[in-house]
Length: 228
Picture 1 (cartoon, rainbow, N blue to C red):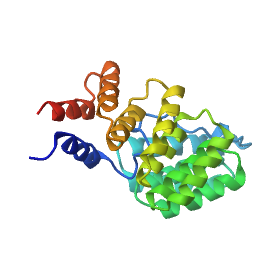
Picture 2 (picture 1 turned 90 degrees about the vertical axis):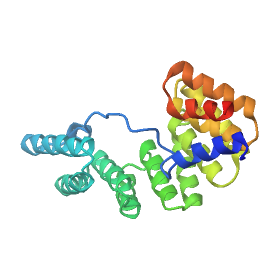
Picture 3 (picture 1 turned 60 degrees about the horizontal axis):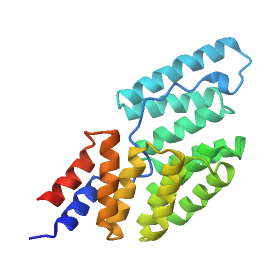
């Protein structure tokens, strides 16, 4: 019979994807045309309507429609940084990471110090298994804003994917220092503890998750595996 710890690890790993850098998507407010000033009120209003349509397509999980709308938006406002970011996110989330990189390159030309832009570019590289380039992007993002907990989580995931859970652990801990209620970072740390053969720490982390979210499926499944 397989060791229960090994079964627990396999169960959790089966749920991991190449997007593990990202927590489950939360509803985001629409990007606003006013984040990059537009001097044509009619164009600004048109862009706001299209942004709302793109966000609706995202909620409906209509990736093709969403990508088409963001493409149209970047044609209408080619110097609008946030529109390039959103177009890149849409492309990456729909399996088009190579195209997403071109969008991030464009937005970072417009704003070379965009913290989320560098992180997003790193996630696209990670999706393509270009881990060294992903790491460089994450490090650039952290150099601009070392308090971004999502980037610390992303670089930790990268260490795990590179077979180095020892380096991942302090990065997860930093992410949780910055955002103590991030169950996603805790979930990743729990797996990291298992990779380091620290079952007690993994159990403690699972219980920490359940103290925040008693229905967190992966923490419950992990503890159940140990009881079987």
